[in-house]
Length: 159
Image: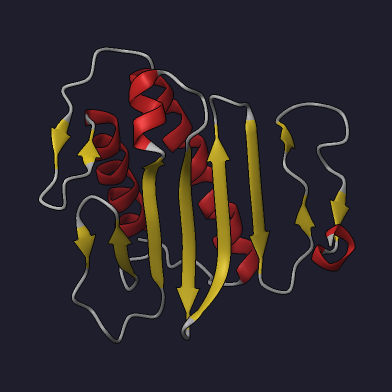
């Protein structure tokens, strides 16, 4: 296995590739019949939630075996001395997802040293994605593949 560098840019690129894969999985489940279950805390979980998180965990473990993972559906790894921790919610907005309302997203973040290093919010039913990396410019959320998608702004410019 080839060891991956852990620069912010590399972590962000990998997180974006995870979001691409998560979009494909979640959209395959979107607006279909759901075998919905209730978790112990009373919230809902769909097969799309479970499949997406399992896939993301597998990809992260392959690329970054020294990293921990905390997920909405499966909880967290016990590793406390991990180089970094991936934090994810495969479908944030499960109620909307279940009803066919397009306002839901996959959330992926990387935490290092107690600080969020990278964050991705991918809303494939809306055709929109937002992302940022510590010390990097953050693009505005825009429909993917449209003109202007490469425009970047400083976070302070958006305020």
